[in-house]
Length: 189
Image 1 (cartoon, helix red, strand yellow):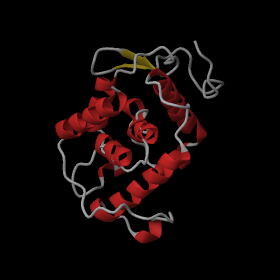
Image 2: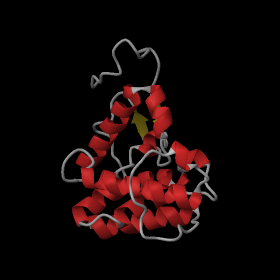
Image 3: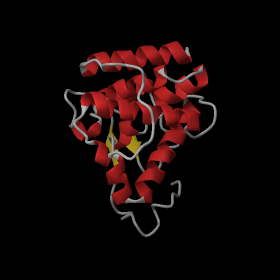
């Protein structure tokens, strides 16, 4: 078993930390470095996971968000990272920043570790999200906040510009999955 910092004195080793994905594969939180991160499984999961804890004007998935981030990245390499930056959420769910801060660093470490394994398998340059993609992600977040949520300005302390778009389309999970897969094949094939 691979040793991760959150294992030590925190995990009951007598319990299982595995689940079965839609494809039938078993994902093991304690040992995922050799897991086959199938893009179809990732796309399906992300297209079913709601952003903003579901507190949006319509269903808005992590898959749709990831495509939007990718579209506003200025280079192909950054666009790849933009599309894949939240792929770990296919195995963790979309945990909002306020909750991540409350849970603590273990969840961030686990999320980063899963994303690093995905990045390696899908041959992304580097093993962490480039700063330029983080900036675009924050711009998308601000645009989402303005266009599809009722989040008030006082809760939002980011000093970033919105994207130059006036609307975000309402997509079904199937449309979002297909859009994600199309973008993946455009960038990676």
